[in-house]
Length: 211
Image (cartoon, rainbow, N blue to C red):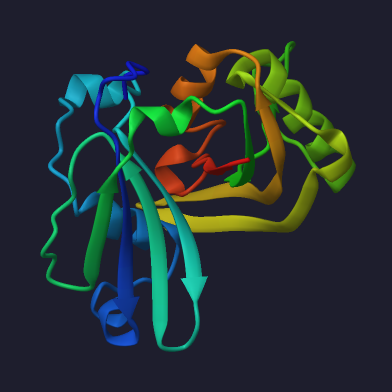
């Protein structure tokens, strides 16, 4: 995704009935990934995928109840508006939406950091450590400052699924609070591209409301 303010972005919601979810075989995070990515034309070459070029697609599985499920999606192109299963609603994100000074936010992130000596990716564990990690990364890399007093680290979980013969594991944390934009260009890029790791599997979509 480009951070160009003039590039269209589309916010969408995929609504699924229990029958839709069953037909799509939504049993784990990888099956949700397949269902969301299946709504879009694949615009990347094999080389671009190997180089980890962003897909232009972010999503957040909102879950639901026994009968319904909703998945929020942000993308740089329109999804299929008439999928075989479920319904899709969308709107265009207006550039002015990203020009406010402060926002309420919520986001699901994969908290981790790279070990400087080994180069390995290590999970950040515990609410206090995750809060400190998020405050630090927001100001240093994502273009916004978070008010520490009202930052809430809510649900902590582990996302685990099979991808071929490999078992993939992601730590998951749901956060909400208020942010102040300190670097507009970086903030817009963070909104468009997502934040942190695991963005192909439902992490990093900043859900924001202007204050």
